[in-house]
Image (cartoon, rainbow, N blue to C red; front, side):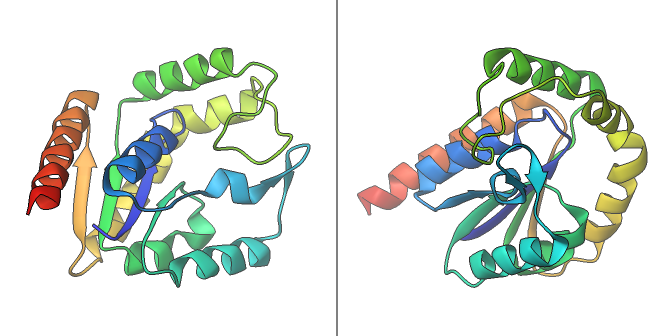
Length: 176
């Protein structure tokens, strides 16, 4: 795993997973939310997001978390590993609510500068619709990928087992 794309519903834990894998395998982590959102929740232009992503994609190693459909195809094509956190909607709503409480009125580490956490009805609705509307298109995109390690986790327990394996493999590699 040298170029890892992490996708999934809001509140699924993409950013947390990116940081965890990054610390295990020592690969730089890039959060698309931190790139997309400028101070005061001001979005950057689509072209600027594409340019920023392309700069990252040209690097030797990376972990990128986030969906952003307008930039997803290229990211998935270049990634050697795609991790899709396909959790139930209720689990993602819980994760989002937990995050909103933890970072209430402050900017979380994986977000753009001066974007304090807030409860947002529009984002809540997006999470509610994700598995129904976005997920089928994601599976279509994943089906088109060749020579890519695709990992789909439907339960946090499956993800924990995967992370334990990555930790063990990394320890073994360091011993050799």
